Length: 353
Length: 164
Length: 106
Image 1 (cartoon, rainbow over the protein chains, first blue to last red):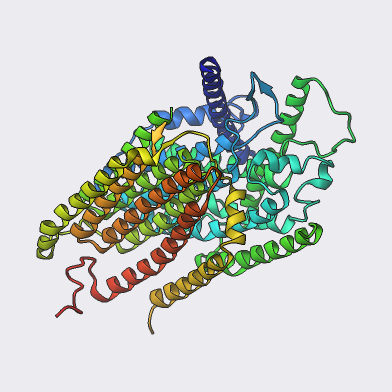
Image 2: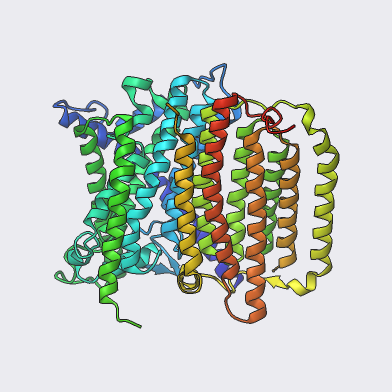
């Protein structure tokens, strides 16, 4: 018993370290991907000088941010000013802990492709997302700057409002799979490849679009990036931040993007399962299974990151009253209607007791 | 394991609550209450109430306390000033609270053996177990609560609206 | 193994701190926060007792946990209305001190 607990703890620690390192690397290269893609959308090259195709640009950016002077403005409320970026980054990195990346491959009885497999994985994700807003709210308040405060007020109102639509849009998925366990939700979609994904087979595409829009608002990305709207608020909630503290907000934003991509993949697009289902022969070797499942998962998440950047390069920013009206008057009623219709059809198919 | 986790998070709870009591600025009090609530979520997990733990984080830490910090930021509430009205509260409040604590602690510790021991992993209440009771036996209270929320929304909108 | 009495004592401690904070705090928002603290202390007691009831009856009992669920719902509704009242009071009086909002008192 004691040794198995020790092995479990050691493997878990190794998983945590590997996942955090890979997430941070992914964050760095998502930034590069965004700069490259937005460059192409705006008919320019994007970063191309550091390394081949600008591939070493994240390293240069990191070194620059690390070496910059860490300014501490006079009028800030110091403890919260220091705490806020940490809250933002920790919450962004924590939510990846319940995301399963690949097939159910075990070594010594411990799952390799997920840090923790819990019954309430989906609720934990929602909970951590809802805590993440404190980072933004406190940074704006403690900066003692009117632009920061306005950005923080906008962010907290926006996140509370869109959380409702986000939560409601996921109810259809939970109804269909009858579980809050993310691994189980993926297994339900695994039978017939593309046709049994919640997006196609589960007829949850309305829920998916609501989720996508609400998630864009939750992560403060264009077209809902009002908390940091450059044209009105200089830089919004992180106006007063510099050096590593600014970098923490930056990393938190991109880590949140990656989490949203992972969750959308898991809930609507069959997670790590192949879109061809059983049409292609299934490998029996555990290493081949792991690599194939990781491959599909990464491809799907990359698609969502691409979508994020594409939307940012295309759509203009909303006005604040438009944002609130869109959330409360359009997304929430449509999400409720989606729940009613989904539960009606699921009820039709169930045998009566 | 259970004892270690209990001591850590119970300690965090008490420290957060005391910090709420002694801080002068409302935003510090609000943040210490968030610490209390998040630690309580862990204690719920230890007691096998996993749905409640998640609901505690989502509803309390993620929604209610965000609302509180939002209002504190919106009204730009500063440090609270001490005023004369609190004298009676000091005289009666602290002894009253201490007496309450002493009484409750005495009863609980006196009857300690009849409350039994909590073990990790027994009687885990899954979301399904909760919803089976909630939507069968307690359906009427559940529906009444939804009416209550509707009234609360209407009340909040009516109160916060600017008068013309 | 932790005695359930420990959870109950923790609930009692939190509740007493909530009562003390409710009585000595002068800022209306902090007073409201201490009410939330008391509600949370009671919730912990409910969950602990629910666990004990499961042990006594021999199978899972969730009524205590559902009571906590209802308390959370009511607390959310209460926070929405209460904060709206606080904003309305602040607009009218321009203060958050409970001693300054005593026009109803003789």
